[in-house]
Image (cartoon, rainbow, N blue to C red; front, side, top):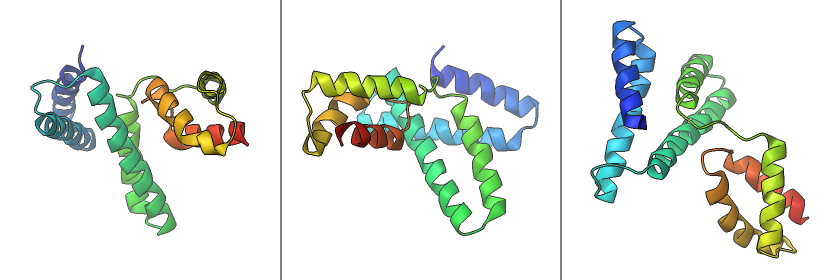
Length: 148
């Protein structure tokens, strides 16, 4: 089942169950997917494109969550956390830190990286492997740690 089909099915269920917050998030994701399809000039997005959109939406929510916490806006923190929880359900299974670390080590060997100057080369080869399965900041931190 494609992401769009899953979203449509979940949207119907959320309407039946009167889950207003979930409905809002699903509609927002559907709109983001449709906007991306229009931007790319496609009728249907590939799984990778859908994952990119989902990752972007999730990252925006996480950034907002941090800002709201810093501003001590607990009302917005709860709302944003609920949105994140809903979005996470549509993301693929996340890799553990150990698994990401192992992939980082393999990629460093593959591209013959030896110092922090090779960071861009490593990240360029690494990110497609972990796209949607690991947080970019975690990957960045692990690559820096390995290259140090």
